[in-house]
Length: 310
Image (tube, rainbow, N blue to C red; front, side, top):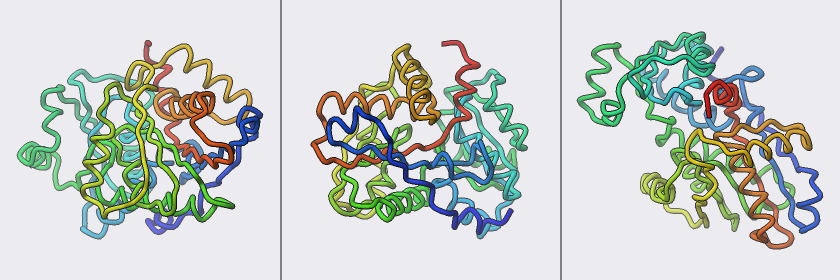
């Protein structure tokens, strides 16, 4: 498959949700279906992973690299996406996995099926993943590699996510008042903030426990041109932390799928939509608001999470 296919995909659909709870408050909820942006059905290379990787893959090819090396936990959407990208576009792939004990789950099994070589390291070593000497040792061991950071967050990723924001503004029939996205590293949110124009507010829903997401997004924004976009982060919808879930979240995901036929997963998108429905009940959105929630994909992680004890 040629990289041109990745660089110029058809826009993913922007779909208005038919839900009486939103209509009763005169608020419209739209879903940007980036879960449908993929080279093949149910492919891990979809959604925000597509957006983050599209320009990185182009750069890797332009710079003559034949191998990608990246980092992630055992249930990482990013690892699965990079493995899929390598399979589609002809790169060898190395995944450095946090945790010295080799584990098997659907995410890692699929990454291996797509040709990724997994390398497990202890958590102390993993924390050195940005250290130049540590990275040099990895390239000496595995060979010359285009190195992608954990989550794929870098300047090329920001460009892809900024393009997503511009796509939403073009597709929306009027003008969004709010965009909302789930946050893990904060890279997708930073790119969206950089790509937004007008008065729309960006809401980042952190899926990790702790009050550090705003700091992470600000750190990313320091690398980007100044923007006047209003944005906020919400830190109380993590349901116990990354890859954790609660009965309330499980019930919400099941009910949402029954009502709307759209699959959410408990690591990212389930927490995002749970937060938005809670904000609606709190009266967060003024009457007449046009809210766009970004479905970033990651559905392969749902099978992985079911494979893991709560």
